[in-house]
Image (cartoon, rainbow, N blue to C red; front, side):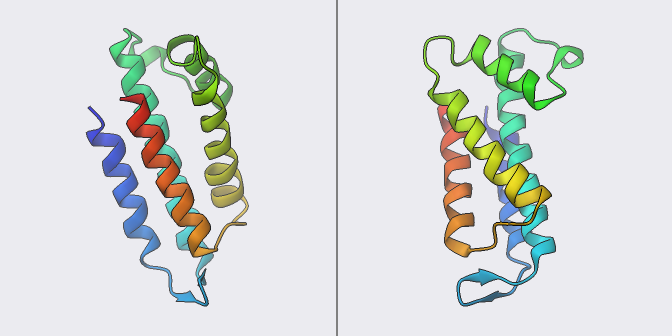
Length: 125
């Protein structure tokens, strides 16, 4: 499918465009934090789609990051830990450093995280 996760990612990019840029730095952290949060949600939406295809019901979808890790191990990374490592990297970067703490505001870094998010979604589908 991929439609809904990619829509979230496009929304994140639109939010990010609201922040002014000076010297390759986003100057309005509010927009950067929001964009990182929505980009992270695009990852969760992509994982949810995979879980739906595997027969997981909406009621049984993961609710915590630890549960998403377990679901990835069970349904995606059973023979390959690369997707779980990629998820952890994106979780730490987008969700923790970008959204919660507002520590990422370099334009190239954000661009790299968004590119990695798109690649993660593509690999899932």
